[in-house]
Amino acid sequence: MTVGQAPARTAPTGRSRNLRRPLVYLLLSLGLLIMSAPFLWMALSSFKTTSELSASPPVWIPTEWTLENFRQLLDKLDLPLYFMNSVIVAVLVTVSNLVFCSMLGYALAKLRFVGRNKIFGVVLGALMVPGNLMLLPLFVLMSKLKLIDSYAGLVLPFAAGAFGVFLMRQFMQSIPDELLEAARMDGAGEWYIFWRIVMPLVKPALATLSIFTFLGSWNNFVWPLIATNDPDKYTLPVALATFATDPNKAGGSNGMLMAGAFLVVLPVLVLFIALQRHFTQGIATAGMK
Image 1 (cartoon, helix red, strand yellow):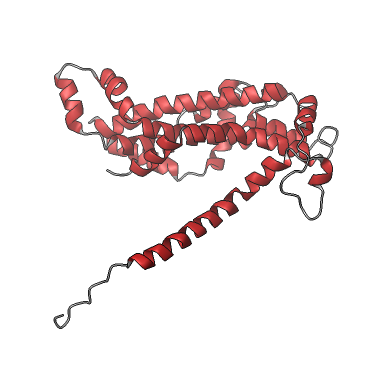
Image 2 (cartoon, rainbow, N blue to C red):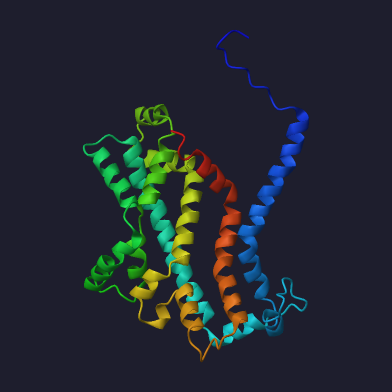
């Protein structure tokens, strides 16, 4: 080794790698257990009896599995109505975001027009505005349009989001321009290029955006609480929160509340499992270019 030359780093030996890998798996498993413990407790508690819910020390796995909590919840709460309200709102918000955010993302990524960079700057600026700051203007606007207590009032304020535009724009930038130019030379219009060429190539980003949007809309509590006065238009989180604070209905029954919370989380969990592969790929490749 010459003077002033830094010593070369030695590659880790096979023995050190074999010792490090179990440690990494152990730490990851511990982190997964800590993160999933509240959900597991909620899911298991929804099948417990009243005595096991109040047992000390706590009982994790129920010794006697029961569906009584779900039966009581269905008897005291119009669960199908509120579940359908949440499904309608979440699906409409998700579909509208997929369409509109993809359109604007394509325009910002692949089309050349005056003011494109300024529009993208506005999108980035909108990402920095706290969502709660927009609640009052949105409520006033929906009131002026007479959309309070309607599905339109719950959907339109979230029909397109700055995060979705940013995600689709970043992902579409990875599509080669030569591919689109070849389609234009063959006589394809922009609509054909967008729907038949670009959209099939961005399925991972669409899956990622659909999960984030559906999750945010399904769990949205503040806006549906503000924008609905009619109980028949309540979404599931609002109905469950109202039910939990009503002593004449919930009556301090933790079992029913756990069952309701489990039903709120279940659709999102199923959606994530179904789109997990596309979601992971979309997160990994969205910012490559």
